[in-house]
Image (cartoon, rainbow, N blue to C red; front, top):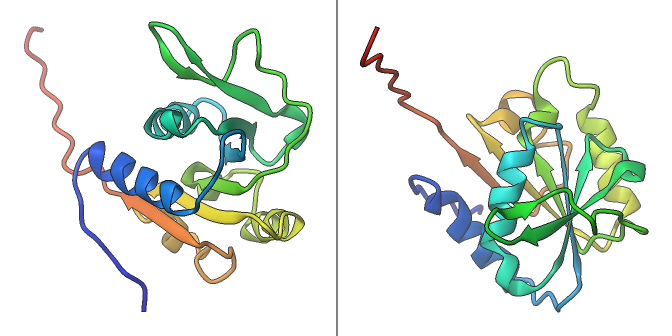
Length: 166
């Protein structure tokens, strides 16, 4: 039976992610590869990367599923973890952990659950982690197709917008 936990806020995403990654027994330099949408997934990838920066893993961002465009995620002083910079080139994508971002499951994205499943099959030794918002993987029907080992689904509710000056 799958264990579920209800948490809140940014730490409710980062803490279980770091705990899971730590439990895998990864060693310095092992590669964690995040697959997601440019722009919308990137800040969340960088947030996740901050959570595990102390594990000294090689972290990589791949736009959509195109590994030829892989970029190293590096710790930029006074900024944080960034998927860019002078050391951004990645010569080989060889993940110990694949992190699938929920933006890939959004309508009109050029990815499918079958393509993500095939990606996981190309890296059979990798653990597959899913991180999404608003139960996107379940809503898109990915849970029974993509071989996730661990998922986080965060809810962004309520959202309060206040105009203080007009």
